[in-house]
Amino acid sequence: MDTPILLLVFLIIYFTTLCFLKNKGFMKKIVSEKCANCCPKCNEALERIRRNNSDRIINLITFQMFSFKRYNCNHCDWEGLRWENKFEKKS
Image (cartoon, rainbow, N blue to C red):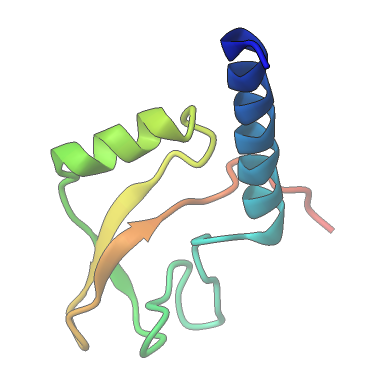
Protein backbone atom coordinates (compact mmCIF):
# COMPACT_ATOMS: atom_id res chain seq x y z
CA MET A 1 0.00 0.00 0.00
CA ASP A 2 0.99 3.57 -0.51
CA THR A 3 2.38 5.53 2.40
CA PRO A 4 -0.16 8.40 2.13
CA ILE A 5 -3.06 5.94 2.25
CA LEU A 6 -1.61 4.19 5.31
CA LEU A 7 -1.10 7.56 7.00
CA LEU A 8 -4.69 8.57 6.23
CA VAL A 9 -6.05 5.27 7.58
CA PHE A 10 -3.97 5.64 10.73
CA LEU A 11 -5.22 9.21 11.31
CA ILE A 12 -8.84 8.16 10.80
CA ILE A 13 -8.48 5.29 13.28
CA TYR A 14 -6.66 7.56 15.76
CA PHE A 15 -9.28 10.31 15.53
CA THR A 16 -12.11 7.77 15.86
CA THR A 17 -10.46 6.32 18.97
CA LEU A 18 -10.13 9.80 20.51
CA CYS A 19 -13.83 10.50 19.82
CA PHE A 20 -14.79 7.16 21.37
CA LEU A 21 -12.73 7.86 24.52
CA LYS A 22 -14.24 11.33 24.87
CA ASN A 23 -17.78 9.97 24.54
CA LYS A 24 -17.05 7.34 27.21
CA GLY A 25 -15.76 10.03 29.61
CA PHE A 26 -12.16 8.81 29.77
CA MET A 27 -10.31 10.90 32.42
CA LYS A 28 -13.26 13.28 32.79
CA LYS A 29 -13.80 15.29 35.96
CA ILE A 30 -15.81 13.45 38.60
CA VAL A 31 -18.70 15.48 39.98
CA SER A 32 -20.34 14.63 43.30
CA GLU A 33 -22.56 16.32 45.86
CA LYS A 34 -19.50 17.41 47.86
CA CYS A 35 -17.47 18.99 45.08
CA ALA A 36 -17.44 19.76 41.38
CA ASN A 37 -14.10 18.03 40.81
CA CYS A 38 -13.41 14.95 42.94
CA CYS A 39 -10.32 12.80 43.32
CA PRO A 40 -10.70 9.41 41.61
CA LYS A 41 -9.12 7.66 44.64
CA CYS A 42 -10.64 9.29 47.73
CA ASN A 43 -13.48 11.49 46.37
CA GLU A 44 -12.08 14.63 48.03
CA ALA A 45 -11.74 17.97 46.26
CA LEU A 46 -8.87 18.43 43.80
CA GLU A 47 -6.68 21.50 43.49
CA ARG A 48 -5.51 22.85 40.16
CA ILE A 49 -1.72 22.96 39.67
CA ARG A 50 0.57 24.09 36.87
CA ARG A 51 0.84 21.90 33.81
CA ASN A 52 4.23 20.69 32.68
CA ASN A 53 5.57 20.39 29.13
CA SER A 54 4.44 16.78 28.73
CA ASP A 55 0.87 17.87 29.52
CA ARG A 56 1.04 20.44 26.73
CA ILE A 57 2.35 17.80 24.33
CA ILE A 58 -0.51 15.46 25.29
CA ASN A 59 -2.98 18.27 24.53
CA LEU A 60 -1.40 18.75 21.11
CA ILE A 61 -1.33 15.01 20.33
CA THR A 62 -5.03 14.72 21.18
CA PHE A 63 -5.85 17.70 18.90
CA GLN A 64 -6.89 19.61 22.06
CA MET A 65 -10.16 17.67 22.10
CA PHE A 66 -9.94 17.09 25.84
CA SER A 67 -8.32 20.32 27.06
CA PHE A 68 -6.59 18.50 29.92
CA LYS A 69 -5.68 20.34 33.10
CA ARG A 70 -3.45 19.02 35.90
CA TYR A 71 -4.87 18.48 39.39
CA ASN A 72 -3.53 17.38 42.77
CA CYS A 73 -5.31 15.86 45.78
CA ASN A 74 -4.11 17.08 49.17
CA HIS A 75 -5.57 14.07 50.99
CA CYS A 76 -4.12 11.08 49.10
CA ASP A 77 -1.40 12.80 46.99
CA TRP A 78 -3.03 11.75 43.69
CA GLU A 79 -1.86 13.85 40.77
CA GLY A 80 -3.06 13.67 37.20
CA LEU A 81 -4.92 15.11 34.26
CA ARG A 82 -8.65 15.74 34.04
CA TRP A 83 -10.92 17.46 31.52
CA GLU A 84 -14.42 18.85 31.61
CA ASN A 85 -17.13 19.14 29.02
CA LYS A 86 -17.64 22.88 28.79
CA PHE A 87 -20.97 22.71 26.99
CA GLU A 88 -22.96 20.00 28.75
CA LYS A 89 -26.69 19.83 28.22
CA LYS A 90 -28.75 20.77 31.26
CA SER A 91 -31.53 18.30 32.00
